[in-house]
Image (cartoon, rainbow, N blue to C red; front, side, top):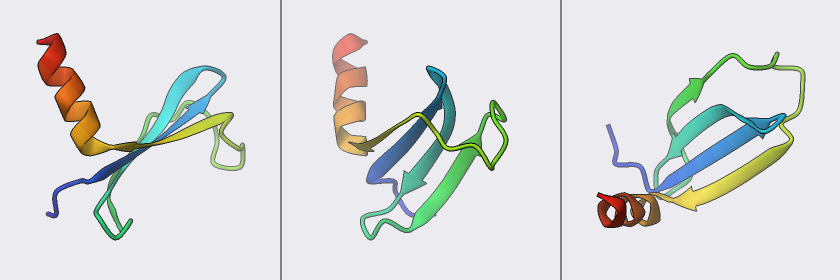
Length: 62
């Protein structure tokens, strides 16, 4: 499995709905869907984050 370079986070009504890990070519590595809303409903908010920034933030808070 490729290392994730990007994390795409979707929220629905303020709750994390789905997280998708992407490689450097934006190909999907894995997706975790929490089942909060049906697939037909559009997410309220989306974020595209660099995985290295998340890792650095986690190390600083440890």
